Length: 452
Image (spheres, rainbow, N blue to C red):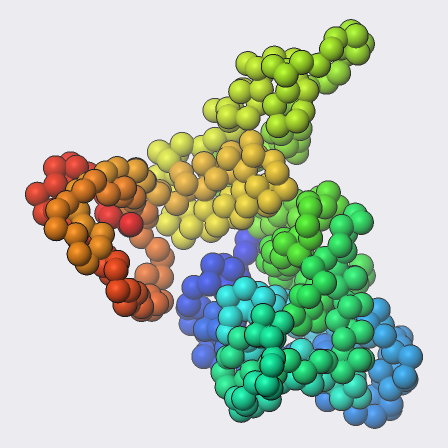
């Protein structure tokens, strides 16, 4: 890292880690994003400016080098040049500092997509309503109502699929043809290397808008964005990883882009024991691949020369390739003692996300290397053990239970961020928690806390 390269700001670190933003006004975009107030972020002045939410007449877009949203021929592919032109105009009017807010709006769109497709609850905001008014009217969702209604007689609940959230229910009614066409076109734009994206992805517009603000930055604006909001590279990598999750198989082009963005992020991270370990640009999985020689063509491939459907020279090489991580590429936990808790937490998240990227792309050696480094950075200690106890309500005797004992370093903001309340299981058979025997010698010998 160059001495002249600035580090990530404290606000950027907090938002990336999902921690409370120190010293920020509750109304700031960073604070709202961390608090999960996505609707307020999407209705902010920055979001309206870059998406053209308030545009309702042609005069507002006459000076833009982009397709007019008032024409009937405006399609999904035209959203990109329109948003790019609006972003350039907003930065010109508000100054380069606007890139910080633009990045936060892009991160909010990404969070909204993840909530819609995985975690819930769905947002009340239809992503089409963020676009200029003629497009919002043409592409608005047609099956959402603000009050729950009874399902039509004979409706197939498996086809309905949309769970009731925040007073809304999907009644099985088909989307308007224009909205359905938009969603199909957006899903098509999410394809990579010939791999198709999941065709029934709900609200793909959220992910596409996130891509426009985080990944598809106009080339003339990249240097300016990097100077004001270098964390945009980290958010771009996260967006591309979510895009990969929509594909059936790994796409090499997405992996290359993700790694490139995360390499850029490393320029803005503080030095740590992991800095030198990550200098190699070649992946560990690539380095351990067998290079074919001329005499290998004459050798028949037998069963004992194949591991995971790939021919290799010997079983010994296979075991080494799959399980061993070179010690020079791992950083022991003792080396992190001189690094601040805040920096360790940032590096732990960075290394863990790199590990997830490689794991998703079927590169186990690289995944293991980064996850081991993340464990060292976080100070996580864990051990699988056994202890006697009861798991069900009707057990009359203790049996051995598998227990995960773990302890991690104290989080920087543990005193400020509220921990989610644990919900009761209320199961007729299982206890809320395993009742361990108080005198269990297995637990008494451990200097760790019971996690499960």
